[in-house]
Length: 59
Image: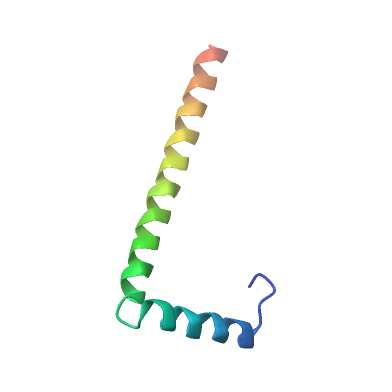
C-alpha cells in the first residue's frame, strides 16, 4: 500500500492516536468515508451528464 510497510503504518497509527485520541478516530473515519462516498457519487453523476450531452450532439 503506497510502498509503506508494517513499521511505517504502525508509526502512523500511533501518531494518529496520540493526536486525535482513540475516541475521535472512528468519527474521523466515518466523516472521511462520507466525504469520499459523496465525491464518488458526484464524479459518477458528472460522467453520466457528459455521456448524455455527447449522445445528444451525435443525433
